[in-house]
Image 1 (cartoon, rainbow, N blue to C red):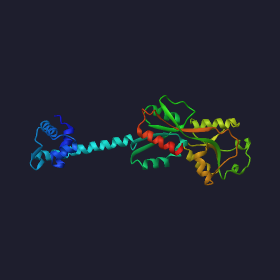
Image 2: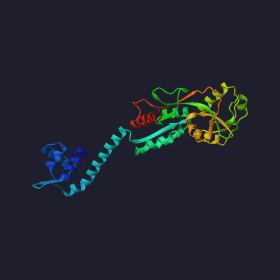
Image 3: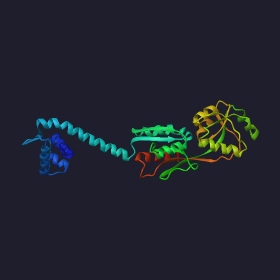
Image 4: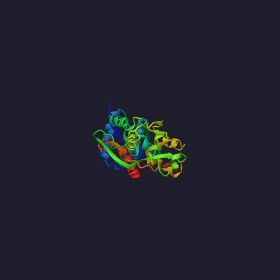
Length: 298
């Protein structure tokens, strides 16, 4: 049995208005056309649905049974329309975000604020190295990545939107012995304990390049942390040094927990970008999220 859903919606309009005349006007149809549609609907269903008399139109007993299903269908179509509009404007759906350790310390507050205005949106955040994240993005397992660029190539068809540029600096806890020295030389740095990111991370490689240019080729990291926030917490104990991006450390410097050491290092720029498929492939939600990121950090 094939039932035309458009005719069911017209049946609902007639039943709720109690009049073919009013229903036809609401539906922008002529009364004869609406009457033909109802006769065809009754033929499709195999049962009479409406009775017309001088008082208007009313449902038959079977029509009253069928009406709730037709109304439910109308409600479902309305919800689909609302969801489609929300999708087009980036107000519903799910975000699968891959992020490297550096910006991961900056994103949670922003993400909470973004979702607060978009109640139909859910998000999950995976923290990892940039190379595994790029592979996941290529397989369609992530919607976008937030991480460093200019170090490793990324696949064709991927857009990189620069969010901000940070710099690496040498940090210590406020109670560390070197924190009070106005001048720090190479010998001071040869005998300290270090905190670093994992050996296979791009951050570790960049830091190794910075320290090597200073003459520190054999640096032993006593503690290895994948998260920048965790490394900053360890630095506050006053027992270690670390080369880290300035931006995540700013709050702890202002609170007095950390100091930036006066060491003339070649501080390379560290650009962080949103990586996502080209506009033709990216969802409206991803583009909305990237736009919000750019407004906040760009």
